[in-house]
Image (tube, rainbow over all chains, first blue to last red; front, side, top):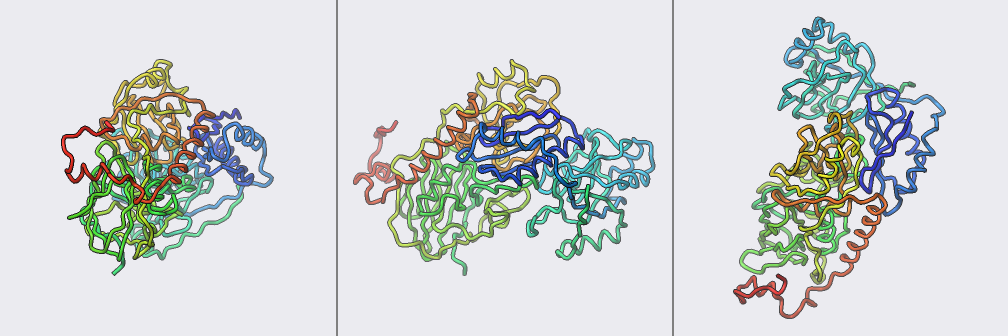
Length: 240
Length: 342
């Protein structure tokens, strides 16, 4: 894979592996992040994986681009010895009524019934490509190809926290109420980002997510427990 | 009752900030922290704090604050702002003052800058979230209850009584840098722009539009056109990145910016110039010049040295010149005299 080093000011560089949403690119990004963490290079202060690249932030008082680029380059060819371990999260989702304002339209546009869209949406586990846009907001993929639609032409001013949405080849969960342009097909009662929890974000890049359908009654029960802080969701360690 | 500072008027947007929340961008948590870290550090030095201590960031109009502690030492950093103590003294920026219980003061911000900083000796006793006291209001995290201050808030102080010692001043305060051309490193997506757009970016004057906040500032000026598409697969946004959406109108991203985004970024403001950019306000002009990475890294080291030297140059207030022109002007003892600094 052709790797490019891009400049991001005097405190950052971008190691770019591709320009598409692609699982193989993502694995390269996450492998480099793991290798860099293990290498503990002096002056590297933070890394941020995205679909296409790993952002590496550094302290120019400690190191510099001239030293970092070869040091990172030396890590690039390395293959991890073992298969990567990830946490698989089973996230409840309610595809009913008011929780899924766009489900019928999506179903019409892709030529399936709403039930079938919901079923296919939860068929396979998703890969957490990255977290961004809002604290804890996961970009998950890949969506079954037949469900792929462009973003909405008219973004909403307000999307409720917990909304599960799809656009292009991805699905995501809004962790806070915010504007949004994706198609909302369900809602989870689980709080994905909780400042009082450590770490505050439930999901991390490289994790896996499987959605499990629940009815509105169970949604209400889980929501109540979540708000009181009494709902813990367990992740399962799996080898990829 | 907890000792602290009672906010009687909050100002336009006053929030608890420090040097930011480092290490959690991969969870989508922005760095936040002061728009002008240089002034925050100097304000802290003036009251004897560690440089990274949390202070109040005051955007535009200043708050009015009542001391609800035995004593409190405060210092304002920011241009020619002042601390006006009700019914009494007026203390210029870049000087600490020790206030008595019940005293009320108003922060008179320098209107030529968007922000100034009020440091409090001992710091602010708010919980740290992910290692930082910085307020990120959009997600309701950090600072005082995760939000800007409002009237009636009692901001808890770490000390109920300021340590006994003389107040300090900074003999040669830094300039606001209003005329400074901002240095940038081109990239990460400079290849996504036409040569004409790159040239326009570096040759033109931009203005901070009214759409400016802690997340970023939209810049008015020539439109910058992309080579090919403007909708890229999301990648990371470094602080100071200048992203250009399809409209061609650049957005300079500041402390509360989102961690990732899908617009090409033509350039990134160097760290040494971020405080200068953070101080600019709507209507202010901005010009950019490109520097290489190694030059930018050297400028970061120079900026650190200058700031450390400034922090070491503080002097006791008693050593201020016996005739303090600022005080005379403020007291209207001299009028109609052209200041020697103009």
